[in-house]
Length: 484
Ligand SMILES: [Cu+2]
Image 1 (tube, rainbow, N blue to C red):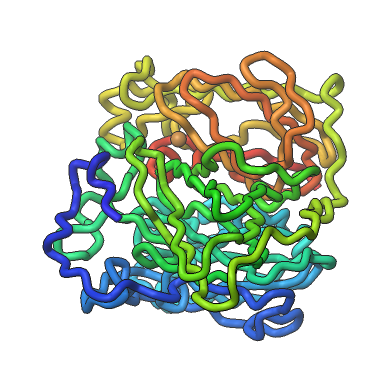
Image 2: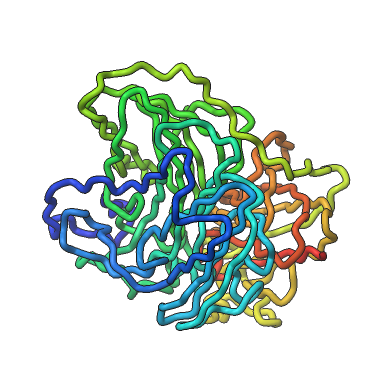
């Protein structure tokens, strides 16, 4: 699918002859079972290494050179049960240093994978052992946290599914990992535009080629009458996707965001907005015609494009919607409500970027005017500081209740991700809101004010940054220090 309407770097489809449609590119999870590759006691090695992928079309011979875990994109699906211990040995066979961050997991700080804050980079030829337990069930993911604006754009990510102890019965449990790539005409990653300052100061690196599970418009095989759990994950550097899953051929309800179960399943009334780093779990009750084909549309550019298709089995007849109720997932048990009245308030003022008002910021201990900041590739700031990690945003006592008042004084949206914790939105533009789900990544719109409430219950140094990776590298990162 071509996104060139939003990118000046569009790719010409005529260069690629379209053969047979790609099939079976969706990674299927065996329903209600633990994949044999994961286990509670076993160490498994994941090798970060160069590989290639058929991003353009599975039937064509063009293979795009990528960097991937075990050389594939997405990397291997890691599937565990709540309470299990993950034991992964990262082996680095890349030419550059790397790491793994376990996005959304309330993890042991030493295992968080943030190079320069929680661990040293794993150099070429080196290894690092990640060992931690999984307190919460849900859809999570893992990715590099070193030079991530380049390494993730090359494909270093995968999905981590943590099964509920009492998972809802579904006929198929499927991944839907969506990414946009910036490819050249020859189908290879446009490495020449890595570090492009225009991207860094605007929306980030947007791609011109969209993939789902590392493939072009995969077909998802379904049967009428089936119930499907679809786990959406946005692994793009910067694009905010809008996925329209509504169709007369199925009923669709959202059951979780960022892995966290919604109190009540919500029937989809509109397209799902998915910012970089975010996840949404959906239950679909399939009622389409045998042999039929139903598109999933991506609508973020205002010009809807099909990014995958449900393809109905030709046999078995048309079946009505299953009459099984869609139950809420079992809720996470370990999140104390935030005491808003007593919580300490911390301000986070975002400035910078194109069309912003920033005239200068602190960087490396000195006040720099904008020209010097551009030379230093720091064009965004939090509280007037561009990307320095020498001091935390806040020092917190363990179990301290805090409110982070984010004020976005930029012309750009930012997907703010906090490591090791989950938060609730408690105020939006000054108006209290309640009952919002616990999340790990929240989209803060241009000129918006959002207050996040949380209990700092996990000791350690926790990065808090924009998940538009060029914004993060360009200055939008800080951290909180939670004392043991
Ligand atoms: Cu941002």
